[in-house]
Length: 290
Image (cartoon, rainbow, N blue to C red; front, top):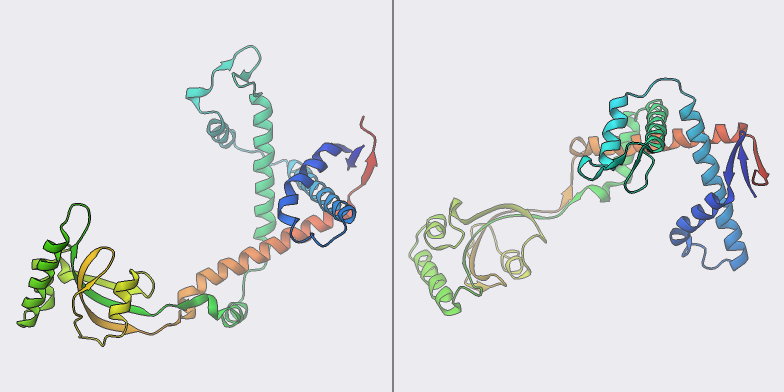
């Protein structure tokens, strides 16, 4: 048994394959259902998915506007790169046994479907300023920014190629220069294994640096210089320049992101309505395999 969708026969094996592909996603959601009821529900969903895909393809293929041959060729080449495309001139198939002409038809159908989906989506209403503002207000947590820190450091790395004692002696020499009143940036450029730019790390969000580093500088006040401390990288001395508390990014900074999210939602809704309208008019029957 299979389906006849607007006169096109679809074998039942397609529905079974769709149900199999859906099962992992829905198993947890349906775990409390009776096993028989669960399988019936899954099959119903799979059946509707197949019907909607067929209807979408039928509508796309009905559009007479041509597809540029070069667009098909480009995708065909991506599927069958020239180096591995040893084609049988008599049968038109690749050595792997793939019918390239059939592949061209499949590619053309897919491009037509994509074109139809874009056309439907383009008709979706564009987000209005009020919607953008309401989305921003309702989803402010998504736009939170972590506390920001601006710091510099002097580091003497300790790894397989660097001696622990030598690194500690070197960082102590840097600490001695700081105690004498030499500018932090000058000492960093002279002593640090990350010399340059006065040891500046720029602005970074809390949680980006290694735990030992952040635990040292977080309690500090701007302008303070830490003592010598150890991290997984080696020995450090750090100074904190400035802190910024956590906050929320301004609407202007996230407006494009919100517009994109609202547009995607509107396009999905428009496509759903388009498919629902086709489904309402479609002639779908269960029939025996021809």
